Length: 93
Image (tube, rainbow, N blue to C red; front, side, top):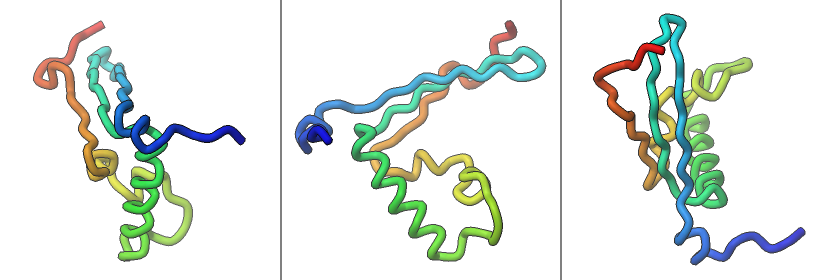
């Protein structure tokens, strides 16, 4: 396996993703995720998730991640934010 990025390379390169969701009524909501590099985010998220499960926040049986961790989980990870673009008005298509 090739070496991954160095700690400095990870610190210098953040991860951003844009999302557009279209509702059944045609309303459009857009947001941008900004977080640490993916190599850093994954273990941070795994640790936070494991701590919450060990604290008893998980129910028995199959659960989708949002069912266990909630819709705001991503923003509980250090140095992560989601910015809604024009959150007060949906844009009809």
